Length: 157
Image (cartoon, rainbow, N blue to C red; front, side, top):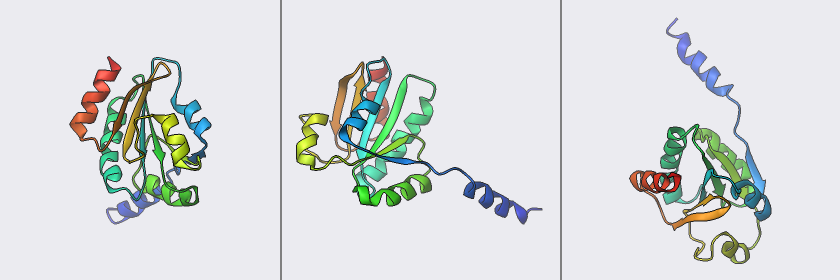
């Protein structure tokens, strides 16, 4: 019986549904992340090739799990090329990412970055939080677990 356990576990993991990665335009992104309600939208811009981005994703996932059921929604926006959607999807599924994942296909970043936040240089990781349809916080750089938790708690209050 014990010898079957690893096989059963592997089969159950293999049968888990794959997480979708949605390729979106800038307008689609704005419609998903900027809503005029009292939910805090925590949007993290990242890429699979960005080491600091990948290092901080577990902090976002932990906060997402901890705040489940509260008025907080996490959205990860991949800055990978739209041609890399399968690579992003594989990364998301291998890392069991629970939050919604979008892949932004908005063309030339020099045109749309200011529409996200005028202070953004375009470097990643970058995080923006929206509440009541407005930017509540913009942070360019990598979060520590404690700093992320602290910032989110301030925005929830």
